[in-house]
Length: 200
Image (tube, rainbow, N blue to C red):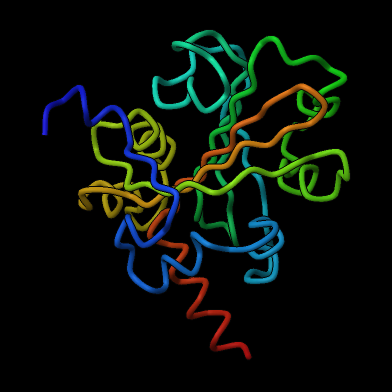
């Protein structure tokens, strides 16, 4: 596969198209709030904000948020941690044209969960989930690996040795504003299933 194509993911409307293992498919298709599920599978859940600022959106994000080509957006990057371990890298983009009325809490989230805000606001309309395998050349996999560079137990190395990571994304609408959330699932998320099963 050519390098240029590695920088874009092939987003699919059905999870079966990405051929994820059963346990990973279960996480990818989590109904409702992923944050709520992660909280239920850990003793301590934390959102670690990596970056929140203006940036150029990725080519495979532009069309999803109604842009004809990559343009500047508001961008937010976080790691979702369960009991100290990073399990999900999340990337959110909001078109610059969206106003504070559309997304009043976005700029002030800090290390609070965006998912909690989205799922408990009756004005937010959720689109359909899409699924992909994010390969090594894709910017989101590169950013996730960079964020994991100082993790204990070699998590970045574990993720890097895989040819891809599984991801899902969804567009949310509030008033006239659009917001795209992409969640890249790290190998450690599968440990949460085993831990939760052991506790029950």
